[in-house]
Image (cartoon, rainbow, N blue to C red; front, side, top):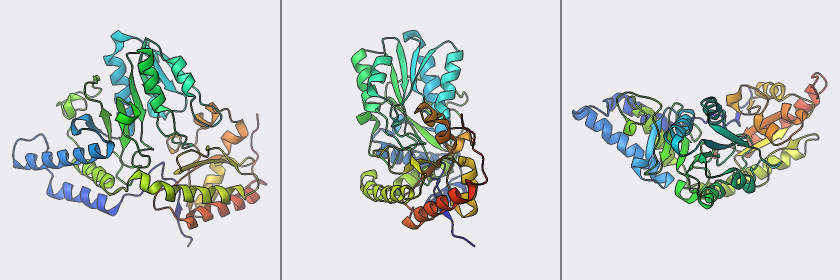
Length: 384
Protein backbone atom coordinates (compact mmCIF):
# COMPACT_ATOMS: atom_id res chain seq x y z
CA UNK A 1 0.00 0.00 0.00
CA UNK A 2 1.48 3.36 -1.05
CA UNK A 3 1.80 6.41 1.20
CA UNK A 4 -0.60 9.28 0.66
CA UNK A 5 0.77 12.67 -0.38
CA UNK A 6 -1.98 15.29 -0.20
CA UNK A 7 -1.11 18.38 -2.25
CA UNK A 8 -4.56 19.85 -2.89
CA UNK A 9 -4.80 22.16 0.11
CA UNK A 10 -6.24 25.08 -1.87
CA UNK A 11 -9.27 22.88 -2.55
CA UNK A 12 -9.63 21.92 1.10
CA UNK A 13 -7.46 21.03 4.06
CA UNK A 14 -7.65 18.17 6.57
CA UNK A 15 -9.45 19.35 9.69
CA UNK A 16 -7.28 19.75 12.77
CA UNK A 17 -8.24 17.24 15.51
CA UNK A 18 -8.59 20.15 17.97
CA UNK A 19 -11.05 21.89 15.62
CA UNK A 20 -13.09 18.70 15.22
CA UNK A 21 -13.11 18.23 19.00
CA UNK A 22 -14.34 21.80 19.42
CA UNK A 23 -17.20 21.17 16.98
CA UNK A 24 -18.18 18.02 18.89
CA UNK A 25 -18.03 19.88 22.23
CA UNK A 26 -20.33 22.61 20.93
CA UNK A 27 -22.73 20.06 19.41
CA UNK A 28 -23.03 17.98 22.56
CA UNK A 29 -22.45 20.44 25.42
CA UNK A 30 -23.52 23.81 24.07
CA UNK A 31 -26.36 23.04 21.72
CA UNK A 32 -28.65 25.96 22.58
CA UNK A 33 -29.82 28.51 20.02
CA UNK A 34 -27.71 31.69 20.38
CA UNK A 35 -30.89 33.74 19.87
CA UNK A 36 -32.76 32.07 22.77
CA UNK A 37 -33.18 34.16 25.89
CA UNK A 38 -32.71 31.38 28.46
CA UNK A 39 -29.48 30.02 29.95
CA UNK A 40 -28.82 27.53 27.15
CA UNK A 41 -29.14 30.32 24.60
CA UNK A 42 -26.96 32.67 26.66
CA UNK A 43 -24.17 30.08 26.85
CA UNK A 44 -24.33 29.50 23.08
CA UNK A 45 -24.29 33.27 22.45
CA UNK A 46 -21.21 33.57 24.66
CA UNK A 47 -19.40 30.93 22.57
CA UNK A 48 -20.51 32.64 19.34
CA UNK A 49 -19.18 35.99 20.59
CA UNK A 50 -15.88 34.36 21.55
CA UNK A 51 -15.46 32.83 18.08
CA UNK A 52 -16.27 36.17 16.45
CA UNK A 53 -13.64 37.88 18.60
CA UNK A 54 -11.00 35.26 17.67
CA UNK A 55 -11.52 35.74 13.94
CA UNK A 56 -11.77 39.51 14.25
CA UNK A 57 -8.50 39.61 16.20
CA UNK A 58 -6.65 37.65 13.48
CA UNK A 59 -8.08 39.95 10.80
CA UNK A 60 -7.26 43.08 12.77
CA UNK A 61 -10.94 43.98 12.83
CA UNK A 62 -13.65 44.71 15.39
CA UNK A 63 -15.95 41.78 16.31
CA UNK A 64 -18.99 43.70 15.08
CA UNK A 65 -17.39 43.83 11.61
CA UNK A 66 -17.42 40.01 11.26
CA UNK A 67 -20.52 38.36 9.77
CA UNK A 68 -20.65 34.56 9.60
CA UNK A 69 -21.78 32.78 6.43
CA UNK A 70 -21.89 29.22 5.11
CA UNK A 71 -18.52 29.70 3.41
CA UNK A 72 -16.53 31.79 0.97
CA UNK A 73 -19.09 31.42 -1.82
CA UNK A 74 -21.93 32.90 0.22
CA UNK A 75 -19.68 35.65 1.58
CA UNK A 76 -18.63 36.62 -1.96
CA UNK A 77 -22.26 36.62 -3.14
CA UNK A 78 -23.30 38.78 -0.20
CA UNK A 79 -20.44 41.19 -0.89
CA UNK A 80 -21.17 41.66 -4.60
CA UNK A 81 -24.96 41.46 -4.69
CA UNK A 82 -25.36 43.25 -1.36
CA UNK A 83 -22.99 46.12 -2.20
CA UNK A 84 -24.30 46.64 -5.74
CA UNK A 85 -27.89 46.68 -4.52
CA UNK A 86 -27.15 49.16 -1.74
CA UNK A 87 -25.19 51.58 -3.97
CA UNK A 88 -27.24 51.48 -7.15
CA UNK A 89 -28.27 55.14 -6.87
CA UNK A 90 -24.61 56.20 -6.79
CA UNK A 91 -23.65 54.61 -10.12
CA UNK A 92 -23.85 51.44 -12.18
CA UNK A 93 -20.25 50.39 -12.86
CA UNK A 94 -18.55 47.39 -11.26
CA UNK A 95 -14.92 46.42 -11.80
CA UNK A 96 -13.74 42.84 -11.23
CA UNK A 97 -10.76 40.87 -12.45
CA UNK A 98 -11.08 38.08 -15.01
CA UNK A 99 -9.22 35.70 -12.66
CA UNK A 100 -11.63 35.77 -9.73
CA UNK A 101 -13.18 32.63 -8.27
CA UNK A 102 -16.50 31.62 -9.85
CA UNK A 103 -18.28 32.76 -6.67
CA UNK A 104 -17.31 36.33 -7.69
CA UNK A 105 -17.55 35.98 -11.47
CA UNK A 106 -21.03 34.44 -11.47
CA UNK A 107 -22.58 37.11 -9.18
CA UNK A 108 -20.90 39.68 -11.45
CA UNK A 109 -22.62 38.09 -14.46
CA UNK A 110 -25.91 38.17 -12.56
CA UNK A 111 -25.39 41.89 -11.88
CA UNK A 112 -24.85 42.41 -15.63
CA UNK A 113 -28.23 40.76 -16.19
CA UNK A 114 -29.71 43.24 -13.72
CA UNK A 115 -28.42 46.16 -15.76
CA UNK A 116 -25.07 46.94 -14.16
CA UNK A 117 -22.04 47.62 -16.33
CA UNK A 118 -19.29 45.15 -15.37
CA UNK A 119 -15.70 45.53 -16.55
CA UNK A 120 -13.44 42.46 -16.35
CA UNK A 121 -9.71 43.16 -16.08
CA UNK A 122 -7.21 40.67 -17.48
CA UNK A 123 -3.89 39.86 -15.81
CA UNK A 124 -0.48 40.13 -17.38
CA UNK A 125 1.48 36.99 -18.35
CA UNK A 126 2.65 36.75 -14.70
CA UNK A 127 -0.94 36.33 -13.49
CA UNK A 128 -1.05 39.76 -11.82
CA UNK A 129 -3.60 42.39 -12.87
CA UNK A 130 -1.65 45.58 -13.69
CA UNK A 131 -2.28 48.38 -11.19
CA UNK A 132 -2.55 50.86 -14.07
CA UNK A 133 -5.39 48.84 -15.62
CA UNK A 134 -7.25 49.10 -12.32
CA UNK A 135 -6.67 52.83 -12.14
CA UNK A 136 -7.87 53.30 -15.73
CA UNK A 137 -11.04 51.24 -15.14
CA UNK A 138 -12.23 53.05 -12.00
CA UNK A 139 -14.28 56.20 -12.55
CA UNK A 140 -16.87 58.37 -10.80
CA UNK A 141 -19.64 55.87 -11.60
CA UNK A 142 -17.81 52.87 -10.11
CA UNK A 143 -19.70 51.59 -7.07
CA UNK A 144 -17.85 48.31 -6.45
CA UNK A 145 -14.40 46.88 -7.14
CA UNK A 146 -13.69 43.20 -6.41
CA UNK A 147 -10.12 41.91 -6.59
CA UNK A 148 -8.84 38.79 -4.83
CA UNK A 149 -5.70 39.06 -2.70
CA UNK A 150 -4.21 35.68 -3.71
CA UNK A 151 -5.29 33.86 -6.85
CA UNK A 152 -6.53 30.37 -6.05
CA UNK A 153 -4.94 28.76 -9.13
CA UNK A 154 -1.54 30.44 -9.47
CA UNK A 155 -0.93 32.00 -6.04
CA UNK A 156 -0.25 35.35 -7.73
CA UNK A 157 -0.68 38.23 -5.27
CA UNK A 158 -2.94 40.96 -6.63
CA UNK A 159 -2.64 44.76 -6.18
CA UNK A 160 -5.47 45.27 -3.69
CA UNK A 161 -3.82 48.27 -1.99
CA UNK A 162 -3.37 49.94 -5.38
CA UNK A 163 -7.09 49.41 -6.08
CA UNK A 164 -7.93 51.18 -2.83
CA UNK A 165 -5.63 54.06 -3.74
CA UNK A 166 -7.19 54.37 -7.20
CA UNK A 167 -10.70 54.49 -5.71
CA UNK A 168 -9.65 57.33 -3.41
CA UNK A 169 -7.74 59.18 -6.13
CA UNK A 170 -10.67 59.03 -8.58
CA UNK A 171 -13.21 60.02 -5.92
CA UNK A 172 -15.29 56.96 -6.83
CA UNK A 173 -18.22 55.98 -4.56
CA UNK A 174 -16.98 52.38 -4.71
CA UNK A 175 -16.68 49.79 -1.98
CA UNK A 176 -13.59 47.61 -2.34
CA UNK A 177 -14.13 43.87 -1.86
CA UNK A 178 -11.28 41.39 -1.67
CA UNK A 179 -11.59 37.61 -1.65
CA UNK A 180 -8.96 36.57 0.91
CA UNK A 181 -9.93 32.89 1.12
CA UNK A 182 -6.48 31.71 -0.05
CA UNK A 183 -4.61 34.41 1.91
CA UNK A 184 -6.14 34.23 5.39
CA UNK A 185 -3.60 32.97 7.95
CA UNK A 186 -1.04 32.51 5.11
CA UNK A 187 -0.23 36.10 4.21
CA UNK A 188 0.28 38.98 6.62
CA UNK A 189 -2.56 41.46 5.96
CA UNK A 190 -5.48 43.27 7.53
CA UNK A 191 -8.45 44.77 5.65
CA UNK A 192 -7.44 48.16 7.05
CA UNK A 193 -3.89 47.91 5.64
CA UNK A 194 -5.30 46.79 2.29
CA UNK A 195 -7.85 49.61 2.28
CA UNK A 196 -10.65 47.07 1.82
CA UNK A 197 -14.26 47.62 2.87
CA UNK A 198 -15.28 43.97 2.43
CA UNK A 199 -13.14 40.88 2.92
CA UNK A 200 -14.07 37.20 2.47
CA UNK A 201 -12.52 34.37 4.53
CA UNK A 202 -13.32 30.66 4.83
CA UNK A 203 -12.78 27.87 7.35
CA UNK A 204 -11.87 24.85 5.27
CA UNK A 205 -8.78 26.35 3.60
CA UNK A 206 -6.97 26.62 6.94
CA UNK A 207 -7.71 23.27 8.62
CA UNK A 208 -11.18 24.17 9.82
CA UNK A 209 -14.44 22.54 8.67
CA UNK A 210 -16.33 23.06 5.42
CA UNK A 211 -19.59 24.98 5.47
CA UNK A 212 -18.43 28.05 7.38
CA UNK A 213 -16.89 31.37 6.41
CA UNK A 214 -17.17 35.04 7.19
CA UNK A 215 -17.44 38.41 5.53
CA UNK A 216 -15.65 41.37 7.07
CA UNK A 217 -17.73 44.50 6.54
CA UNK A 218 -16.04 47.76 7.47
CA UNK A 219 -18.02 49.72 10.01
CA UNK A 220 -20.34 52.13 8.18
CA UNK A 221 -20.49 50.13 4.93
CA UNK A 222 -24.04 49.26 3.94
CA UNK A 223 -25.07 46.06 2.16
CA UNK A 224 -28.49 44.69 1.26
CA UNK A 225 -29.12 41.25 2.79
CA UNK A 226 -29.47 38.33 0.39
CA UNK A 227 -31.07 35.95 2.92
CA UNK A 228 -34.13 37.10 4.88
CA UNK A 229 -35.46 35.61 8.09
CA UNK A 230 -34.99 36.09 11.80
CA UNK A 231 -32.42 38.85 11.53
CA UNK A 232 -29.32 37.02 12.77
CA UNK A 233 -25.84 38.42 11.95
CA UNK A 234 -27.02 41.99 12.17
CA UNK A 235 -29.89 41.28 9.78
CA UNK A 236 -27.42 40.59 6.96
CA UNK A 237 -27.48 36.81 7.10
CA UNK A 238 -30.59 35.38 8.72
CA UNK A 239 -30.70 31.80 9.94
CA UNK A 240 -29.63 30.16 13.19
CA UNK A 241 -25.85 30.30 13.31
CA UNK A 242 -24.04 26.96 13.00
CA UNK A 243 -22.17 27.31 16.27
CA UNK A 244 -20.23 24.00 16.02
CA UNK A 245 -18.79 24.95 12.63
CA UNK A 246 -18.14 28.54 13.67
CA UNK A 247 -16.40 27.40 16.87
CA UNK A 248 -14.26 24.92 14.95
CA UNK A 249 -13.36 27.65 12.42
CA UNK A 250 -12.27 29.91 15.26
CA UNK A 251 -10.23 27.08 16.84
CA UNK A 252 -8.40 26.53 13.53
CA UNK A 253 -7.66 30.25 13.30
CA UNK A 254 -6.47 30.31 16.91
CA UNK A 255 -4.06 27.42 16.22
CA UNK A 256 -2.71 28.85 12.95
CA UNK A 257 0.82 30.22 13.37
CA UNK A 258 1.43 33.84 12.41
CA UNK A 259 1.70 34.04 8.62
CA UNK A 260 5.02 35.86 8.67
CA UNK A 261 6.61 33.19 10.85
CA UNK A 262 5.61 30.42 8.42
CA UNK A 263 6.56 32.08 5.15
CA UNK A 264 10.28 31.18 5.19
CA UNK A 265 9.43 27.48 5.65
CA UNK A 266 6.85 27.63 2.86
CA UNK A 267 9.23 29.48 0.53
CA UNK A 268 11.82 26.77 1.16
CA UNK A 269 9.27 24.04 0.34
CA UNK A 270 8.14 25.89 -2.78
CA UNK A 271 11.75 26.34 -3.93
CA UNK A 272 12.40 22.63 -3.40
CA UNK A 273 9.31 21.76 -5.45
CA UNK A 274 10.24 24.13 -8.29
CA UNK A 275 13.73 22.64 -8.42
CA UNK A 276 12.41 19.07 -8.50
CA UNK A 277 9.84 19.82 -11.20
CA UNK A 278 12.20 21.81 -13.41
CA UNK A 279 14.51 18.79 -13.42
CA UNK A 280 11.73 16.88 -15.24
CA UNK A 281 11.95 17.52 -19.01
CA UNK A 282 8.88 19.24 -20.43
CA UNK A 283 7.50 20.78 -17.21
CA UNK A 284 6.44 24.45 -17.45
CA UNK A 285 5.86 26.58 -14.32
CA UNK A 286 2.95 29.02 -14.57
CA UNK A 287 3.11 30.66 -11.12
CA UNK A 288 5.34 33.74 -10.81
CA UNK A 289 8.37 33.56 -8.50
CA UNK A 290 6.78 36.13 -6.18
CA UNK A 291 3.51 34.20 -5.83
CA UNK A 292 2.34 33.03 -2.42
CA UNK A 293 4.49 29.90 -1.90
CA UNK A 294 1.53 27.72 -0.88
CA UNK A 295 0.44 27.40 -4.55
CA UNK A 296 2.37 26.30 -7.65
CA UNK A 297 0.68 25.94 -11.03
CA UNK A 298 2.46 23.77 -13.62
CA UNK A 299 1.77 22.58 -17.15
CA UNK A 300 2.82 19.25 -18.66
CA UNK A 301 2.40 19.68 -22.43
CA UNK A 302 1.48 16.45 -24.13
CA UNK A 303 -0.67 15.10 -21.29
CA UNK A 304 -4.07 16.48 -20.31
CA UNK A 305 -4.21 17.73 -16.74
CA UNK A 306 -7.12 15.50 -15.79
CA UNK A 307 -5.31 12.43 -17.16
CA UNK A 308 -2.20 13.21 -15.13
CA UNK A 309 -4.34 13.94 -12.05
CA UNK A 310 -5.77 10.40 -12.14
CA UNK A 311 -2.35 8.88 -12.82
CA UNK A 312 -0.92 10.67 -9.76
CA UNK A 313 -3.93 9.72 -7.61
CA UNK A 314 -3.25 6.05 -8.35
CA UNK A 315 0.21 6.63 -6.88
CA UNK A 316 -1.29 8.30 -3.78
CA UNK A 317 -0.44 11.87 -4.86
CA UNK A 318 -3.38 14.28 -4.85
CA UNK A 319 -3.47 17.56 -6.78
CA UNK A 320 -6.04 19.58 -8.80
CA UNK A 321 -6.35 20.27 -12.49
CA UNK A 322 -7.11 23.99 -12.40
CA UNK A 323 -9.46 25.01 -9.59
CA UNK A 324 -11.08 22.10 -7.76
CA UNK A 325 -14.38 24.01 -7.86
CA UNK A 326 -14.27 24.04 -11.66
CA UNK A 327 -14.72 20.25 -11.99
CA UNK A 328 -11.98 19.92 -14.63
CA UNK A 329 -13.23 22.78 -16.83
CA UNK A 330 -10.34 24.47 -18.68
CA UNK A 331 -8.87 27.15 -16.42
CA UNK A 332 -10.29 30.62 -17.07
CA UNK A 333 -7.38 32.00 -15.04
CA UNK A 334 -4.65 30.52 -17.27
CA UNK A 335 -6.62 31.44 -20.39
CA UNK A 336 -6.89 35.05 -19.15
CA UNK A 337 -3.11 35.06 -18.66
CA UNK A 338 -2.77 34.36 -22.38
CA UNK A 339 -1.35 30.85 -22.09
CA UNK A 340 -1.65 28.72 -25.21
CA UNK A 341 -4.26 25.99 -25.25
CA UNK A 342 -1.78 23.12 -24.79
CA UNK A 343 -0.53 24.70 -21.53
CA UNK A 344 -4.05 25.40 -20.25
CA UNK A 345 -5.26 21.86 -20.96
CA UNK A 346 -2.22 20.23 -19.34
CA UNK A 347 -2.17 22.35 -16.18
CA UNK A 348 -2.07 21.07 -12.61
CA UNK A 349 -2.37 23.05 -9.38
CA UNK A 350 -0.15 21.89 -6.53
CA UNK A 351 -1.09 23.43 -3.19
CA UNK A 352 0.79 23.06 0.08
CA UNK A 353 -0.01 23.46 3.75
CA UNK A 354 2.20 23.99 6.76
CA UNK A 355 2.15 20.21 7.21
CA UNK A 356 3.53 19.45 3.73
CA UNK A 357 6.88 17.65 3.83
CA UNK A 358 9.66 17.44 1.23
CA UNK A 359 8.88 13.74 0.75
CA UNK A 360 5.39 14.71 -0.45
CA UNK A 361 6.90 17.06 -3.01
CA UNK A 362 9.49 14.52 -4.12
CA UNK A 363 6.69 11.96 -4.61
CA UNK A 364 4.85 14.44 -6.82
CA UNK A 365 7.92 15.14 -8.97
CA UNK A 366 8.61 11.42 -9.34
CA UNK A 367 4.97 10.82 -10.27
CA UNK A 368 5.02 13.61 -12.87
CA UNK A 369 8.21 12.21 -14.41
CA UNK A 370 6.71 8.72 -14.59
CA UNK A 371 3.44 10.07 -15.94
CA UNK A 372 5.08 12.05 -18.71
CA UNK A 373 6.97 8.94 -19.85
CA UNK A 374 3.93 6.66 -19.63
CA UNK A 375 1.04 8.89 -20.66
CA UNK A 376 2.66 10.86 -23.47
CA UNK A 377 2.60 7.66 -25.55
CA UNK A 378 -1.07 6.89 -24.96
CA UNK A 379 -2.72 10.33 -24.81
CA UNK A 380 -3.60 12.36 -27.86
CA UNK A 381 -3.73 15.99 -26.76
CA UNK A 382 -5.88 18.38 -28.73
CA UNK A 383 -3.99 21.37 -30.08
CA UNK A 384 -5.57 24.44 -31.51
